[in-house]
Image (cartoon, rainbow, N blue to C red; front, side, top):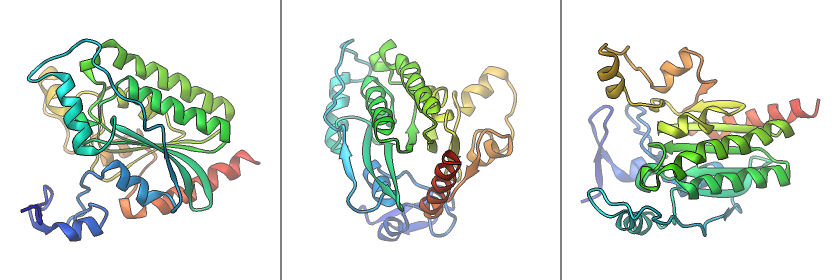
Length: 262
């Protein structure tokens, strides 16, 4: 049990150790599985990086209950992921370039954005501004966390306003969208990068395809809202395979930093 997994892309059964060794990418069809936040940081940053801003915890201001109490969902997510919320900040190097990296954890209530995520990303922006180093945000989210109501939606404006300071200071911000990046995250900061890139096959959009089809009562084009479709339509700058991602970011940062000094 737990040694094998079936690929959603090619339907082949994979030895989990092979999948782990291949950065959670199917060796047969290239399907990109979800990658935990800590593993993502490990794959991108050089050894010696530091995890920061981990102390923030979500509360339950509305005492919210749907199928189960929100407090119970928080406790279960914290236990299963070992994190206090759905995001991790790290400072370190990609290649020779100092960066601030902010990575979402989809395993924590679908990577949903609440006040803790908003504050954590705002702190990442502050660190980038103070250190004058690029910021990279890796999104993997179902959108705003409705269990915390309007306070969650306010994070869209909070983070977007913080990123405007990055633009004013001419410090690069790269947005990497992974599967899925939807809802209020897409509708705000995930699409505000100086460079917007995505992993192959990533679902990126506001409302999901099924909801859109039911609303407009039309069949959507093949691959609608997938990374390759958005690249073709001009919403993305690149679609980058996970194994090539670090090298791509190193080249992109060298170009961006070089341009800033011209």
